[in-house]
Length: 104
Image (cartoon, rainbow, N blue to C red):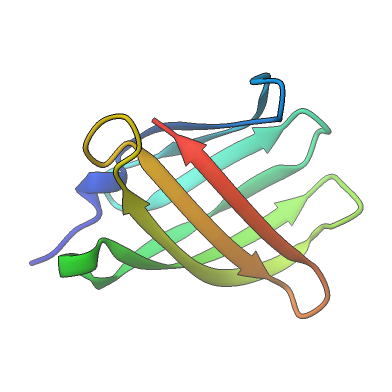
């Protein structure tokens, strides 16, 4: 059975000046929680779409901020400095779109 162990980590997104902006903790079962520096809180689930390409679907509830809502989309893990150290996420709620690049 395929699982989401590849995502099991703490992931951080940085601004243009390399300051941490958002942090997510992903567990081996694909569940996650996170928060950004503006106070937005996220919780949700990654599900494997294709393990050959490290491709996942993602469902997320964002609360405590102006862009609160139910989001869905896709994510993939890629190599940046080391193997599988980059998580790219694209989600939307039908109105807002969020693109995030996170590092392990």
